[in-house]
Every structure is written in structure tokens, then in C-alpha cells.
Amino acid sequence: MKELPRHPRQSSIGIEFSPILLPRPGVDLRKWAVIACDQFTSQPEIWKSLESSIGDSPSTLHCIYPECYIGSADEEERIKRIQKRMKEYLESGTLIETEPGLVLVDRETPYSRRRGMVITLDLELYDYRPGTKPLIRPTEQTILERLPPRVKIRKGAPIEFPHTLVLINDLQTRVVDALFTRFTHTPPTYDVELLLGAGRVRGWFIPEHKVKNILMELLMKNLEHNSFIYAVGDGNHSLASAKSFWEELKNHIPPSQQTSHPARSTLAELVSLYDAGIQFHPIHRILHPVEPVQFFEFLRTFTPIQFRKAHSFEELKNVVIEHPFWIGLVDQRELHTVHLLEPTLRTVTEVVQQAIDAFLAKHPDIKVDYIHGDQTFHSLSIRSNTVGVYLPGLPKEQLFPLIETSGVLPRKAFSIGEALEKRFYLEGRKISVF
Image (cartoon, rainbow, N blue to C red; front, side, top):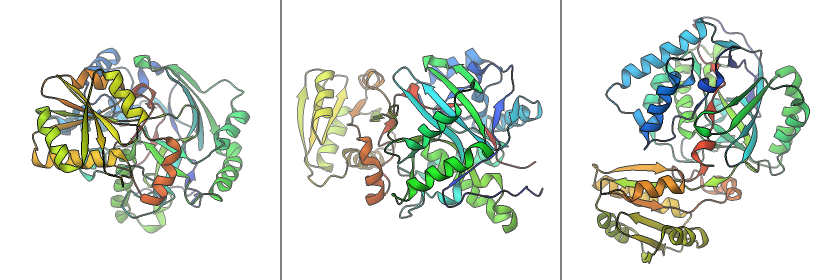
């Protein structure tokens, strides 16, 4: 194995500065940048449209595995094509590597605006196993069955393209604000209008020697007042896959090379939890094919509940939003609001997810989809042989206290923003040595 250059890790704070891959000048960034692979899982037609409009142009679309296709008959071929395309982009000069540093990101969406930084995180300071309390913590339960396809891609991939969004427990947003105030007075390194009407993103690459001391001081001050300062907002399973791959790989690497191996780290965007652009939204559930009354009766036996008919979807939404421990049930014929009567609930989502898991265990032919956005939820839930479960949101100020006291939340407990506010793949990073 090729000897790797050594560089100091900022192990006490979980970050490091590594070279970042960006498309060379001349690449159509509008086609290059593609939305996170875990979006539109129930709407494959959106991914088909992207494939049609992008074609064979250089694009991160050719380097990711949209989740709507996971488990398809051509999975092995898809993974091989992804790995091959990554190598082609490196060999052809489609991607250019910067010096070590970070990228400040200003993202405008149809709904809001957020600011963050793309930087490398040390996977040794992250752990998704229950009961652990690392510096970088997951926010949702890791479903181990979801990792193998992602790990398989990573095993043969020279590059990673992250859609992970990691939240900083920074009440005054001082960390990101300080960097934007100091470093964004020059023209951005990239500036692109995004596909799907998802807004715009601008990025400024800042080399390590200019930003390191400032950032380290800001993060160290933050850590003085918190037991941990990073919580994974989006991309929990992507980060878990990177960790799983690293744990397997390091058993075959001499200890002297483990510290500097690029697979020990992963690229992510850090954003303050209290940034105005970070809005928590619920993730609703769709069950199909199922006779709605079948699920309703199961839910009644699973936990104490009280049904109440709703006369419109707006009425259902208002009840769920305004009253604690209520959910909504929607099918082709009726709408109901449901009061969960258990007084010791930690979160409504946790109880509902446990009920759904128990129901699916008895009915393995039924599928659950996780849906962002009211309009999409409503249109899907009124299809035949379908039931939709409309859930309340989680106030974002509760996130770090819940993670601190009780560990991870149930999977898909919340979403940061609407689907079109998710990260687009743009920056990359080498994770292997050839």
C-alpha cells in the first residue's frame, strides 16, 4: 500500500482540513449538482426526469445511488458504474483538487437561506452504536440493513460526495457567522442555480492556513459549555456507512498509516442548529398496500388511543400541530385525528414508529415510505389501499437535550426543511489511494 503523507489531526475537536475536489472550470455546474439520494423515494419519476435532462454530462448523478432504486435487480451493475465514473472524473481532470481547507456555503432555497461550511470530520470521534456518547453523535436509530449497499459503493470508490448535514450546538451562530464576516468579501469559488427549482448555492474555498486558528478557537469555546457539539441532522446512514467501512478497513492497515488514511474521515457540511435556515419538519409515514381499517385496529391494540373524525385535511393538520400527542390518519375515504393517551411518551414519533415496526413484522408484504411535505403526503395517502400517518414536528431547541439525556431518536424523527432544501452534491474528497 502506498505510504500516505502525514498531517496533524484536530482530534480533540473532531475536524481536520483536507484537500477538496471541485469540478474544473467549464463543467456545467447546474447539471453537476444533484439533490441528496434519499429524497423522492416514492417518486422515481423525478429521478427519471433528472436522468433525462442531465444525460451523460459530467454530474454527481452518475456517482450516487438514489434510494428509490436500492434493491433493484441491477444493483451490482449500478454500483460498478458509479465507481467507474468516479475514477473517470479523476483521471480525465473533470475534478480538480484544492489545497487543504474548507468551503463556506451560502444556500438559498425556495423557503429560506442557510449558511454553513463543508469540512472534514474524524470518524474516530463518531459512533452510531447504542449507548455510546461520542463527540459527533447520530440523531436517529441506525438501521443496519440499510448500510450494505452504501458500504459496497464506498469499498470500490476513490471519491465521496457527501449530502450529510451536521448541526453545531451554537446558540448565537457565532462559529459560522465569524467565518462569513471575514472571508466572503471576494467573488465565490462557485455560484450555481440548482435543478428542480431548489434555489441557488454559492461557495468560497478557504485554505487551511487562513482559517484554522480562527475556527479552532471558536469550536473550542463552544465545547467548553457542552458535552458534545455536533449532531447529525441529515445523512445519518451515510455517515454510519462511512464509519462502518472505516472500521472494517483499518483492520488491514498498519497502525502507523491509520492516522493519516483518508477513509478515516468524511466530508460534511456544518451548520448551526440555530441558523435561521434550519427549520425542523416532521417526516410522515405512508403504508401500502394495506386496508386502512386493518392498521387502525392494530394501532388501537398497540397503544391507548382516541379517534376523532376530521372534516378536512387542514383541520387534521391544525389539530396535530396545535395539540401535544396527536397524530393524523388519512386514507382514500376518511380523515381522523388520533389522541395518543399514554402519559409517559418521550416523543409521539417514537411510539408511532414502534407501532409501525410491529405491524410490518406481522405483515411483511406491506411497505412503509417516509414522506416530506404536506402536499406530497396528502396526494400519496389518498391512493387506494394506502394509509398515511401525519406526524407533528420536533422543536429544534429540544434536539441536543434529547440526544444528551436519552440517546438517539427513532429513525426519520424529523427533517431539516422541505425536500428541495436538502443538500446538493457538489464538493467531493478522495477517500482511497490508488
